[in-house]
Length: 120
Figure 1 (spheres, rainbow, N blue to C red):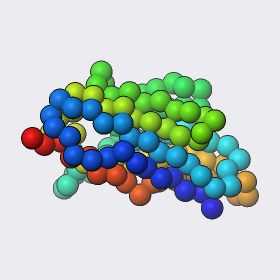
Figure 2 (cartoon, one colour; figure 1 turned 45 degrees about the horizontal axis):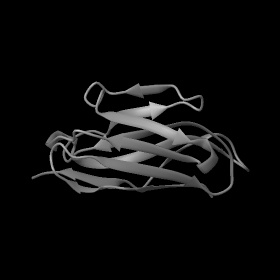
Figure 3 (cartoon, one colour; figure 1 turned 120 degrees about the vertical axis):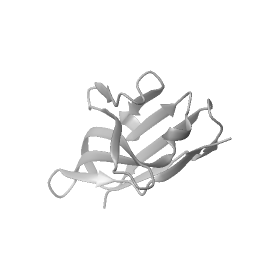
């Protein structure tokens, strides 16, 4: 069974930094794209950033220049370095990935979410 487990959320002051991690575990044959989404109270879930298996990245305009997505393929892990955080970055952040399990077809997996709160 494939799982995505996030860590690294918390409370930070405006202008501060946090680093989120998301590790894929289980019976995995291959991992393709990985990414981060977020959902603030009363709003729809939105893309923050994603990264292809080859390392190509894509960012939402709201985080471009402040957030950096990266991945360690040997550890099946994706990271989100968040700098210059703003109160409007407050949300639950979800990891997602396209994974081929050892037995079964390609599927889209989500983590359980980690809370990020930016407040003074």
